[in-house]
Amino acid sequence: MGAQQDRLGEILRGMGYSEADQPPHPKLDAMPPEAREKVINLYRALGGIHPDPPLRTGPWDSAYAGNLVVELDESAHFNRYRATTLETDWAQRLPWRNSYITYAVEFEDDCRKRSYGKYWTTASCEQQFGPPGPNGVLDGAGSPRWKQRALYDAMRDITALHGGVRMVRLSIYDSLGGVPLGAVLDGKAALNANALSALIDERTLG
Image 1 (tube, rainbow, N blue to C red):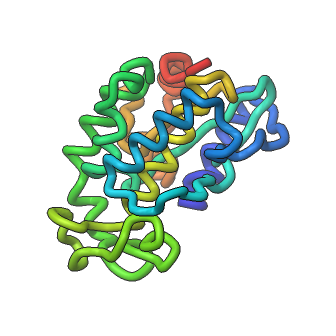
Image 2: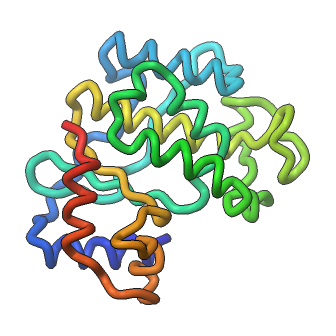
Image 3: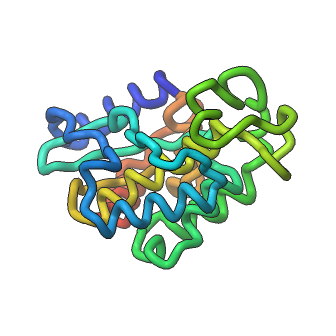
């Protein structure tokens, strides 16, 4: 993912995007009440067990002038837990919603290839979601780490919906003139800059 993120940054700079300081990371306690309610409802829907969860995401993937952040989502982001976050009423306003629900179903087996070690669970994730199920088994307890990742992605979505940032979400599965973005970022296919520009326009929220 690091190499793909770096390549996307090179492409965006070549398209005229100017890097900027990171906006504050989404933090539950700093969100407006309506946004906090959305997050807590999702947390419980995903099986969250902490009575007062100290939820805070990591850094944005990249930040650019105009309070714009760009998130690049690879295979670990597409599974049934992410689909759950996108099946809410408020998620209908997200420009990537329909594509991401499709990817979450179609590419869950790609995600499942990392059903081991810290990709599957960590002690901090278990404090939030309880103990895991068997590696790779998503029925029942499932993966605390995958649940956390889906929730944190949703926190970023909600932050953008409430005007905290302007956000673009791109996936390695997105098509640029029939070529997957992931293949372009891996150097396996040529970039269709016009197609990427159109996709960014389509996916910009805020």
